[in-house]
Amino acid sequence: MLTLTNSAAAFAAAKQLFPGGVNSPVRSFGSVGGTPPFIARADGSRIFDIDGNEYIDYVGSWGPMIFGHAPKEVVDAVTEAAKNGTSYGAPTLLESRLAALIQKAYPSMEMMRMVNSGTEATMSALRLARGYTGRNKIVKFIGCYHGHSDSLLVSAGSGAATFGMPSSPGVTKNTAADTIAVPYNDVAAIEEVFAKWGEDVAAVIVEPVAGNMGLVLPKDGYLQKLRDLTAKNGTVLIFDEVMCGFRVAVGGAQEAYGITPDLTCLGKVVGGGLPCAVYGGRREIMECVSPAGKVYQAGTLSGNPIAMAAGIAVLTKLIGNADGVDYARKLQRQTEKLVGGLKELADAVGIPVQAHKAGSMFCLFFAAHKVENYDDVSACDFALFTKYFRGMLAEGIYLAPSQYETLFMSAAHTDGDIDRTLTAAKKVFESL
Ligand SMILES: *Cc1c(COP(=O)(O)O)cnc(C)c1O
Image 1 (cartoon, helix red, strand yellow):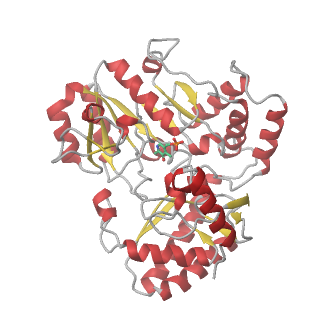
Image 2 (cartoon, helix red, strand yellow):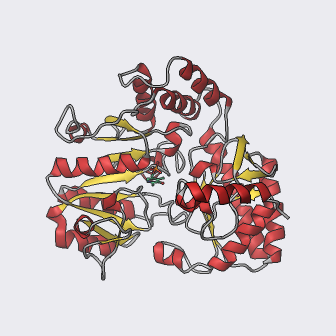
């Protein structure tokens, strides 16, 4: 059995300091119960808690750690950068170097702006879309997550294509009313929105590969439909690739599916595990951002030199092909091996699962039905998921503590790690 004595004490103490004991909700293990391990350190594919337990980590800080934990290139780059000062609030060459690397993989980002979090990137991109079009309404999809800014904490009103309702106290009805929330992968629903409000819609924001309701892939032709409808109506199409960027493909979903959005948001991998995110896209739109244009957006620590150095180190390795390894292929192969193995093991004991994967992202839904939208995810067997999660944790496999989350392969995961994970899964499946 897993001993979490020190973590339990730390969690109790942290609850006096932080709401729920954490600085971001999912870390509290709320939906699966029990004590979240407090992490002492991490290295490669492994994380270690303050009770001395070691885990193979498939959370990877929720996506950024594409080369695993503490890769030498990043540690060296960050250490060097820090020696030169940690922030200046003035332009540097590092920002332009990271931007050039990003453009190599995302040519649609003709201009960009560095920010500090995915939340800031999407919030700023939406303000920009509104400023550019002079329209108020935005469309988001149920189950897609774009950070915690007010206009995105909105759930669907009653019936398809109606005004949104606040999904959190503190978000005003008026703010929510400008957000229209529709089901993902539902062509009729988005057509209805444009039939009703086409001229008023400033932006459609979408996770082109959805990773915040588990991993849900776009149906054939769905992204093209969004592209066609937005183009026809003069609406800005925003791909929120904060999670799927660099993971579905190096060039994100826009490369994988061959669809060019007007604006793109990146985060997570782009900062190499430091606080950094980016929004950017068509020059004509981006030139509306202050001080080139009138749409205000700023940040004391934006383009922070340490974060830039980490991002440059990661992207150089990933897209600069610095060491001659095709990491995208390697990650995809490892992911296929693990996900294929998990599916086989579940099938062997008759547990119905939907095994989804895209590049280095993957997820196991406990369901016999196809999973194509948020309602499908909500109909999964959560009790079974929780048992699986707890069993895997006890076996030293660290998974996301929710059926609504995606898992991430890193280039530091070895064949041995995958074999160990499958051995653990076999044992856990047989015990369910
Ligand atoms: C994580 C995430 C965000 C929010 O990023 P933060 O850095 O947590 O603010 C936005 N969009 C998507 C798709 C994400 O996965």
